[in-house]
Amino acid sequence: MAGPVHAYPYTAAPAVTASGPSPFSGCTVGQMLPDSVVYPNTEVEPFVAVNPTNPDNVIGVFQQDRWSDGGARGLVTARSSDGGLTWSSTFAAFSACAGGTGQNAYERASDPWVTFDPSGNAYQISLSVSDLLETSAILVSKSTDGGATWDAPKTLLRDTNGLNFNDKESITADPTRDGYVYAVWDRGALPGGSRSDISEFHSFAYRGQPMFSRSTDHGATWSAPVAMSAQNVFTLGNQVAVLPDGTLVDVFWTGRGSGLQPSPNQNFIGVMTSRDAGLHWSPVTKVANFSEIAPCGAERVCDPDTGQPVRAGTNIPDIAVDGDSGRVYVVWADGRYSAGARPDVVISQSSDGGRSWSAPAKVNGTPVPAAAFNAAVEVSSDGTVGVSYYDFRSNDATPGLPTDAFLAHSHDNGATWSEQHIGGPFDMEQAPFARGLFLGDYQGLDSAGQDFLAFFSVSTADPNNRADVVSVRLAAP
Image (cartoon, rainbow, N blue to C red; front, side):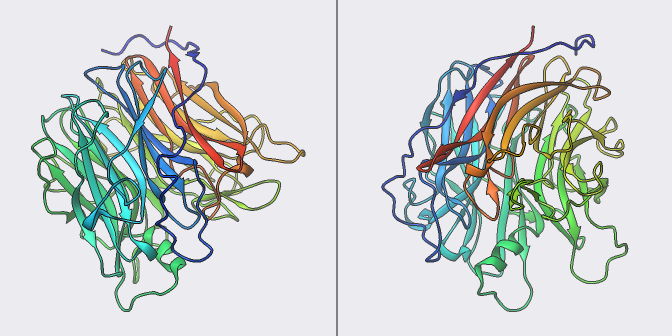
């Protein structure tokens, strides 16, 4: 059972660099267009998972050698056997640079995600793509030794026609059903003719039908992918969480589908639920409207000094469940507290299995008018809710864009929040540029008992290594 409500400061260990020199530095594939730029030794968009059978075993995944116009040379796995104090690296064959051959010799890979099942097996998932994004595929690889080695990836879905594009996948092992693992993603479907401009592919990739596939045998086989909703919706950032009673809750951002809509207010965070391990899904339930951010657009914020976009994935939600009470928490960042001028991190919660949701409440304690974004949420074993994020509170008139990382924590189900600094400041203007200054559409956060482990990217001043991934462990008293 969760412990008594009490606010306390965590002891934050010094940040440990989890990434290192690129193992793909000699790889020459992946050039899409003549002006495509690769950022060597640069690691972005990390995610992290703690082994439930051995909390000292932690696996983090991230994009390695990011390209300016989508994806990376491959996905690298960072593995720790001492709770995040030290890290070693390996990788699954999700791309040609990572050893993929034949059909799996994809030029790029993106959107890393990792999960552990109750037996300690790890599963990671990739969006792997060809030159010009004409082929997109969802691949899964499994590790039975804590991330030291990974098996040959299995393909859940592969589209080659250029009219469909798979995007923003995630993977979740079921803690209540032995052997069950769930993969969800967005599959764009473009009626009519194909597009020739690469930017059109990028734009379309952020809209699509929510798709689902599952394994019931510890990843040995996977079901044929199916659409989760017959409604005319475009979704982004699908992610499944599992309640203590086995109910699945899939969260996502959704915008309008094509054609006439019943309401002009179709831009919101939503969920669908399943009580039979994903065989059937409920209609979409609205968590809250998404409040747009201007002038840089829904997924971006603005560099307050230069006006250039910072790609921040503000409309991509994250979800966590209290394993005792079953309370569900969803976080994202939007402009509701600033009339659209900048994003703040907000949280909504459900105590009835996702059927109803609280009004969004502000989480970040940013003391000045400055953007906060890239929110991740987790619940520790004593019921503490942790939310990590970046913000620009340290920025001033001097050159550069100082950026800090924080963990906010609540010991009363989100009624009140305390905040701790966990990283920075680092200069966001040194980050790689991929449709905006880019450290990832999301970052990683997990819990180990009462502790939290934050896993996030920081930019550097080295032009040959624009960003590293660091881990920070926050120990409860």
